[in-house]
Image (cartoon, rainbow, N blue to C red; front, top):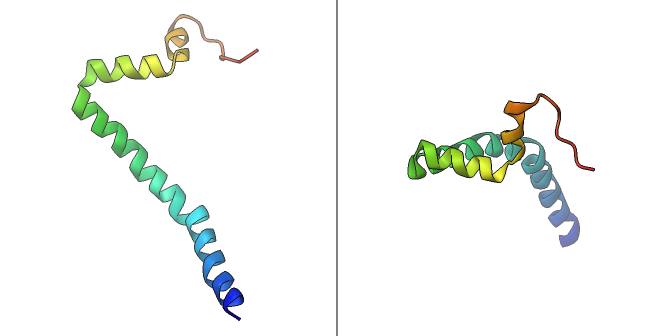
Length: 70
C-alpha cells in the first residue's frame, strides 16, 4: 500500500520537475550565473575566459565554416 502511495506522489513530481520546472530554472539560473561572473571578473577577463572555454569562437571570425569533430 505504501509503495503505491509513494509512486503516486513521486512520479508526478518527477514529471513536473523534468518538463516544467527544470526548463524554467535553466532559463533563469544560467544567464544569471553568467551575469554574476561578468560582474565579478569584468568584461575583458570574462570574454577571455569565454574564449578559452570555447575555442571555436576564435575561428568563427576568420572563416564562416561550421566546426565539426573528426
